[in-house]
Amino acid sequence: MRLILLLTFVFPFLIGAQNKYPQDYFSNPLDIPLILSGTFAELRSNHFHAGLDIKTQQRVGLKVKAAADGYVSRIKVSHYGYGKALYITHPNGYTTVYAHLQKFAPAIEAYVKKQQYKKESYEVQMFPSAETLPVKKGSLIAYSGNSGGSGGPHLHFEIRDNAERPINPMLFGIDIADSKEPYVKSIYAYPLDENSFVNNSNEKQKLRLIPLKNGDYVVENIEAFGNIGFGIETNDRQNLAANSNGVYNIRTFFNGNNNFELDFKRFSFAETKHINQLIDYEHYVTKKQRIQKLFKINNPLSIYKEVLNNGILNIEDSTHSVYKIRVADYKNNETWVTLNIKGTKNKTVTPLKPKTTPYFIKADQAINLKQDKVTVDFYKDTFYEDFYIDFEVNNDTLKLHKNVIPTKKSFKITYDISNYKDQDKNKLYIARLLGYNKYPAYTSTKRKGDLLIATTKYLGTYALATDTIKPTISPLNFKNGQWLSKYRYLKVKINDKLSGVSNYRATVNGKWILMEYDYKTKTLTHDFNDGVVTDTKNNLKVIVTDNVGNNSTFEALFYRK
Figure: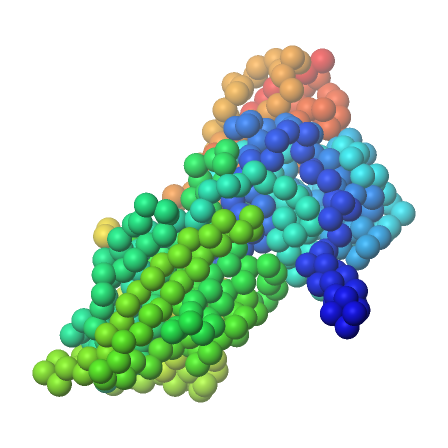
């Protein structure tokens, strides 16, 4: 009787805990089977993916529907990032986000264009009141597209809580067919101090992974001693797509006890930058492979759950241990990796000595580095760990370590350009030298008198660069003096090869017109359906300015009736 009473009270609680999020409140935002190209919390460059990337059959223009009743609470149109994005706040406190859109539903589109023409800017951000743009569940709100930083046509869909934290939409009943187990690409072992070793080495080791017939893996037996950690390169696939996606949960066990857990249910945008401390950042930068570290060092991420001794194993001499890794997707398809560890202290191995330089960074302190006419300011907590940094200035080239150390925040680089001629100072900018050919990539640069100041998050090699070349502007679908009565769009291509395009402005007969900028194709497009071009004879004028102030002007005559 006591057991029955206990179950009566406990079982509903367990069911409620399992169904913390409403299961039937949100509907699919598209009227097609949901197939993903990206999963929630997937590892991306400098951030976790905040939603689901839903495939749109390799095309744009699919109808996007409101996932539930609510109102449009935010609209943002930008050249990069989410491109055209729509935010709907719902009565239950959650907000859904729809990004990389082609265009909005007619009423929303009209509202947006009114603001764009009022502000004379393609890029706008608005926060309509609850009464301005109400929507019903299943009503048309937009059309899918490829705007902003999208790598191909798809719909980016998010669900956020009232603290603006993104949550995995699958927790709300958004169902994706998936019966495939995650797969493991590689396993690495990390000796974590100079007195720790794996297979007679003080360096990171790639371990031999042996697949089993049931889909699991074992690792060739290893010998180790001291404080060690492991890293895993793993992905998942759904039934109807071949994309390599992120996994949902990773747990580790040491001699049968819980040791470490990464749980990708929810995160905050404020913490997403810490992804570079979660992964082996140097390995990613040099080999473009993301190894997730299964141990925690100075990382405040909330996705860490069960963590014993920060996931670090202390292997003693003459011991035998078993370490297991469980990787799971949302549908609880799981893959196991088993490692047998023999504790062996080998006194003949020489520990690696860290490279030292005259400059030592203490992560919890600010530091100023200066040589010749270059100054670098690191603020307190710019880095996660202490390290020796390479710092060298040769003429106008700054060697600031290699980009193998992740940062928490930006730091400042300052060049004194007082030795340059006045006519040259306005054409200078600070560039980060990338790749084998040391291509000078523009870094956001401001000038204050004889100082050039750049703010960046990346170590590496920097230099002063000069841009005296004006942007280029050329018509794409018309010629000067042409009749365009039957044309829907007016298209112009703009480009700047050095410092990059900063801004542009287009007018017809002296009146500002909206031109959408697609940086991927370097195209400006005006839609004649905006109805602002009403004259027969029209003089188009486009002015484009680059990041150091060079500007070009293009003018053409066209006719419409």
